[in-house]
Image 1 (cartoon, rainbow, N blue to C red):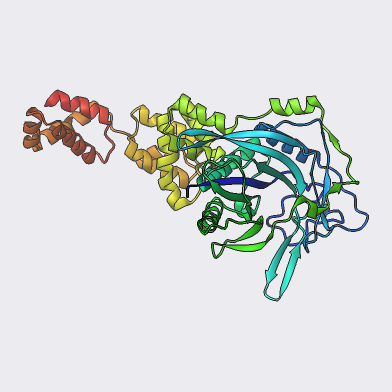
Image 2 (cartoon, rainbow, N blue to C red; image 1 turned 30 degrees about the horizontal axis):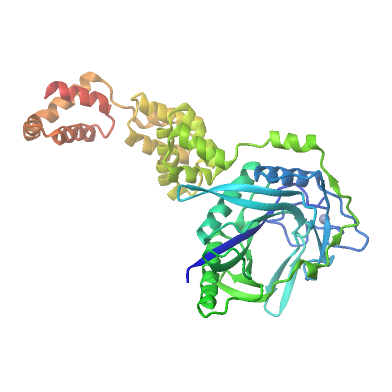
Length: 473
Ligand SMILES: [Zn+2]
C-alpha cells in the first residue's frame, strides 16, 4: 500500500529577552546555580501577580511577522491547567483561542524546489522549571520557570522527515535573523514536538496521529520521525491503523521512542482566561513599525547570495547557517571578490579552524586584516601558498599580513632581473622539458614554472615567471 506521510511541528523557542516573561528575574540562566534566578512570581507563591514583559511581546510579534502571520489587534492570555512538580502554580500562562498571531507561511527549499509550509499560529507562554532525576529522588530548579517562549505551530504540510528537518533549520535561521531567540538547541532554547500520521495515498482524511515530545536536535527530529513512520507503516500493513492519538517521548541516549500516554485534548487542560493579565491590544502603528524594522530574512538572503555573488548552492546554505559568518563573508567579498572571500573565509579558514577550533569572526583575523591579505595576493606581493601560512600566523597572533611578510621575509620576488636569472638556470637544466614543450606539450611548460616556484620557496611572482619563461623558450 502506498502511504503518504503527514507531519506537523510545534516549536518552542526561548525568547532572548533580558528578563523573564512575568517578572524581572534574569532570563539568562544557563550557567547559574540552581534556584538563584528566582522570585515569588516565578516560584508561584500565593498572591504573586504577573506583569507583561513588553520586549517579549515585541520580539514575538516581529517573529510572527517574519513568518508572514496576521497580527490581530486583540489577543489574550489563558491558564492551561496541569500538575507537574516543576510547575508550582499548577498552570501555565499561555494563549488559547485568541493568540498573538495567525495564518502565516514559510517557503523552504527542498532539493531545489520551493515548498510552502503553513504556520497556524505563533503565541507566547512561559516555560516551566526543570527536573533532574537522580536515582531515588528528583531535584527541581526554578531558574527556567517563567522564561518567555514562543510556541510556533505549523500546518501538517510536511511530507517527509527530511522536509521537517529543512523547515526546522529554516525556522532557526529566521528567529536568529530577527534576533528573537538564540535558538541554541544544546541549551534547550529551541525544542520540537512533532505530530505524525500516515494515510493511503490519494485520501484526504487525516488519521490518528502520534505526537512526539521534546526533540532537541535536528538529528533526533529526523530519527524519531523515521522510527515512528516504520511503526505506523507496520500497523497499516497489518490492517489495523492506529485508532487513538498517542504521545511518545524520545530517549535521546538510547535513540528510541517511548510510549508515554494517550494524547490529552484541550478539554483536559480546562483553559480559562488569565484573570491577572489584561488582554493585549496591539496598535496598528506598533505592528507596522515592527514590520518596517524587519531585517533581511534567510529566504531573501539566499536569493541574493545566489544572484549577486553566484555562489554554489551548498556554500550558500553553509553561510546561511551562521549569520555572523555570512556577515563576515559579505564584508570581505565587498572589498575583494566573492570568489576570494569564499576561498579564504570558508575553505582556507576550515584548515586553520581544525587546529584552532574557533570561528573566523571570533578570531584575531578581522575582515580588514583578511582583506589586506587578499589584496596583497592580487597585487602580486605574496603567493596564495605563502598566504595560507600568513593566515595561520594571523590566527595565532595579533599581527597583520604586512608585518608577517616583513618579519619572515615572505615578500614575493618580483625583481625581474633576479627572476630572469633563475628562469634561465631552470631552462638550461631541463632540455628535455623544453623539447617536449616545443613539440606541443603544454604540461611541460607548467613543470618549468613549478620548478622556478620551488627554487624560490613559492615566493616568485607566478605571472612574471610565466612571462619570462615564455620569452625564453
Ligand atoms: Zn522571577
